[in-house]
Amino acid sequence: MQGGPPQIPCPACQAPLVLDVDLLTSGASLACTNIHCDARIGIAQESAAMLARALQGHRNLKGVTH
Ligand SMILES: [Zn+2]
Image (cartoon, rainbow, N blue to C red; front, side):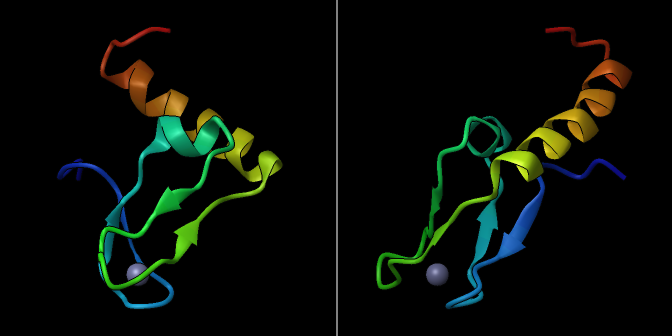
């Protein structure tokens, strides 16, 4: 089930973007990896908090503590 980092398609060009969870949960936006696309993906602060909580569970399963 855990086959590598989570990815989402870029809403502008559909290029697969690796979700940098630490970056997103810090409130920063993620730049598209396609050099011809200048889309940036960001999430709202409250969503970032939810994502951080959701991923906390995964980290705990792996035995990684913060
Ligand atoms: Zn893009």
